[in-house]
Amino acid sequence: MASTIIPTLTRDGAPARKASPLAVVCAAVAAGALFGFGLAWSTMIRPEVVLSFLRFRDAGLMLVMGGGVAVTMVAYQLGPRLLARPLLGGAFALRAAILDRPTVVGAAIFGIGWGLCGVCPGPAIAGLGAGSYELGWAIAGIGLGALLQGMTARK
Amino acid sequence: MTTGMWFPDGAFPLGWAHYLAGGVCIGAGVALLFLCTGLIGGMSTVYSSTWSWFVRRPFFQQPSLTGSRTWRLAYAGGLVLGAAAWFVWSGQSAWVAVNIPTWQLFVGGLLVGYGARLSQGCTSGHGICGLASLSRPSLVAVLTFMATAFVTANVVWRVVGA
Image (cartoon, rainbow over all chains, first blue to last red; front, top):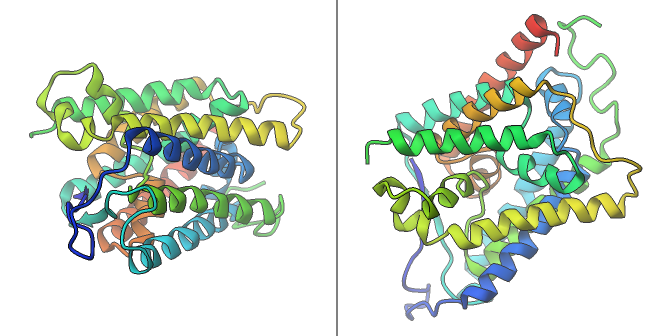
């Protein structure tokens, strides 16, 4: 199961000075806007394009994933080595994941849904910004699915 | 066009540059969030963390959800703003229409939401953040959902034709 661990000490051993909540929200909006611009530019907000990838008609999604992973990897791998702490304070989170049944079963179910509708969680939201109100149906489904998962989770 | 042929019109019939450029933008967004705040920005958690404002069940009151719900919702709001900025910048003449049947969007969405939250990651959480973290569990998750998505999309294509 993947979860995020936020250390309370920075790499140099000093207590992590928390970033101001307002600054974090501003950074999140700016980061989300870049993300959303990219989803729209790459046409990933159009389920038809995603489905044409899954049906071996257009390999574009590989370039989207490749470009996204490459840039993120540079930041994830070099950021904590070059900076003692994030620019706004706090500490770099680690994505700690162990391989267990829910990770694989959940991914299999996710893939079935993705193959059925061509929509994943980010593009469903971003598409609204380009006027694709039909994606509201996907958002409703994803929200209910997330609720169902939480209501039936053991812990 | 038969359903069995692979890439009958070439690998990139609609061009390739916008895919790569868009992907770099997506990565830049995830990278910006991490470098500024240290946070790992997958997109599926917002669908659980937002429920934490309304549902009292202990699952939804975990600190990992209540403590991240504000920035996650802001991050999701940014997605809408960014796509709207693209809409203006690219000079689209009409709203981007989605021609997938409603039931497919809703039922597919249900499975996407349930599965992503059970797996604790989606195309961005496992795909972008997980792979960029060199996480082996995320690699397994990505290969798993790619496999079931390929099969489902092709079966649905043959059965429903949409």
